[in-house]
Length: 157
Image (cartoon, rainbow, N blue to C red; front, side, top):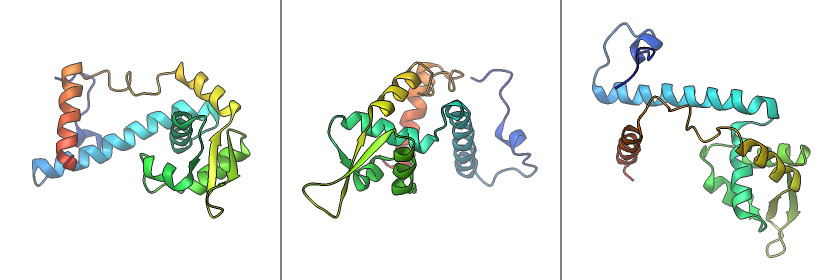
């Protein structure tokens, strides 16, 4: 299934004692793999001066474009639900990648729009492999489909 370059989880984390169960190993493997994927994305976005969370917000805003979205709606759509969306938006405003305006319908809310500069950055990033295709190239299409099915099942989706 894997290639000879693949390092088993136990080797990667220098696990000396066997896992208690296959479920424990799977959970640790998911956490380890998540951190591996995040590390890959950090390196990809570093030359562009943005983080994975900022990229996620920009993608959400582009999906809404030209309509605005509130920070609470952004939070609901984020991959990382623990992200501080207000702070992320503040940083994107300072980088001139998004624009924030008071919401006309509810003055307590703020509307967030992606700027032309933000759209241009996403167009540039679209040319890179930001969607994990090459990162998970060790899997066949069938294996990726199976992995997706198993992950959905594990979450109870």
